[in-house]
Image 1: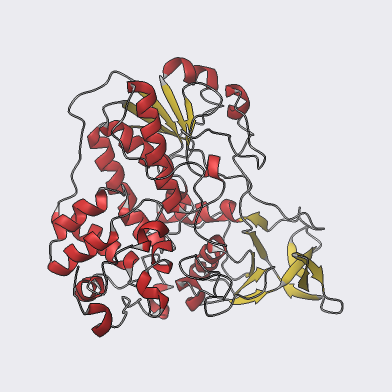
Image 2: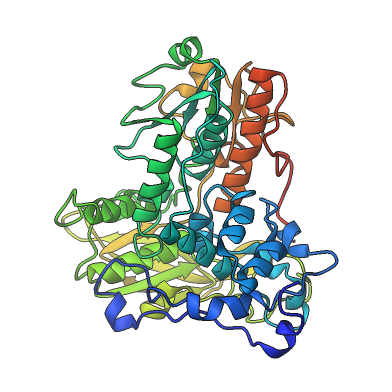
Length: 486
């Protein structure tokens, strides 16, 4: 194990974030550069190397967490990077963006603050990039088989890298103008600077993966053409059909889906715009939805200079401590404060929007809401609690309900859907169409980045076996696996 007494002698410590007044003036990541390395070896030393390490169970990738904690504590950074990459293609993404279910499953967390696994992970990979130990791993020989991966989010990229390294010729298609999917245009720059994504894409390019941005499959290239051109297809198109809010005034100008708003901010950071076409400067912004996407909207609106930001959530405020009915090692629903919440905004719980109010020009100027209580699991309005708040810009961040069908690809390929509207697949990630596989949110439904990467790796193993008859690629999870929660 690492430090035999580390969990007894070393308190939990997190890296320091930059001052709020400084970081809201730019789009750089919120943590102080280099703030992890001075503390991370001792933090890794808190790992107890449990007889049954439940952190493995909390992580869909099956990361070998105690091993790389031990290697970090001993100062073997290259060895730690090797063990980390053995199970995770993109630890710089998960180390920044994953909510760390491994930490809520940490055995130390039963009665103490858990090991800061996520911080150790990102410190390992950042050090590996700095030391030049992350190198392209091209295959020794090519199989002569071709694979199309549709979608360049974390699931698609993971599947593509695994299949390329197995010797297949892989092309990744992306409808946006740049590769990365939600990593590129859904995650704000202050949560993950896109240089981390860019250098991983360059590694994949050097390994032989082909990238085809600006290609809308189903429109620019039909499903039939795709089947004729490739030996296998991996659909990693995500769950991008946004949940809507059908209340009076929904058609007013200034009411947008979060994923219509966030990409413009990222494109502005890329230099495509001087000012985002949907901009919060000087506006009273209301974000409907209390999850991560809502927090991303809050942080983005703050940096754009919003006059105020209010985040609405229909559920009651979670408790500060783990609820009794959500015991360790489940992932508990507790009150969490993101970096964006530290910076600005008001969070309002147990309320429901009833109407958007417009001005004479057809633009939203206010929002009507009412408090709710839950009866039988359903929200019921509380009489006499109706009120109106100013809203010049409303952002809907209420989650997603399945893959989009507007491009016709699902119908062109004749794919079956499950009862939730996701693309149906069997135990091998295969759809009802021979040679067509599905990975990530398109088959699972809206989920976490760590699940997407795990599914991409697992689907790649199934595709490799389909093309080659057998596969040595790892397969961390089956399609039926679910997060340990209540």
